[in-house]
Length: 165
Image 1 (tube, rainbow, N blue to C red):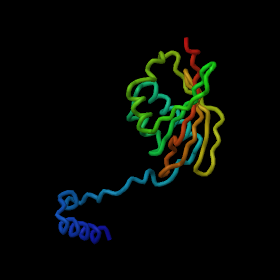
Image 2: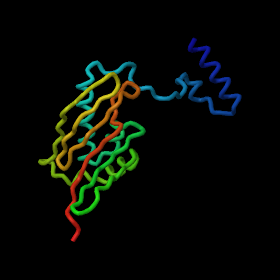
Image 3: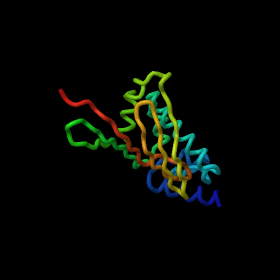
């Protein structure tokens, strides 16, 4: 069956003028990534590991590590409280969150003060939620089982600012 598929792929590629060197070498065709064959057996342990990597990526300014923790449609939102002013909501797309990670905003926290404590973990069939206490904020995270891997879909936090002078 694989030989027949390979032959059809070679013929189709050649007919379209596409290079066939990879196919001729017996390499499989490129397909969309699907993740592991099955979800992790221990969802809670997998989520705990994911959230530790999420926090570590933030503190280290490691956008590549952060990328592996986020769902493609990730959204981060922060409610900002300022005395004598209306609250405001700041939102960041997943790409913006990666950029903030890469800029090293989490590196400002001294290593001795860094923490990542998970609480209130609730796991369903393919959806989970948890609180993540970091050194400078507490985040509420919504997670999804995406292509058999847990990913952070949404993160929300709040921040208080001093009153303007």
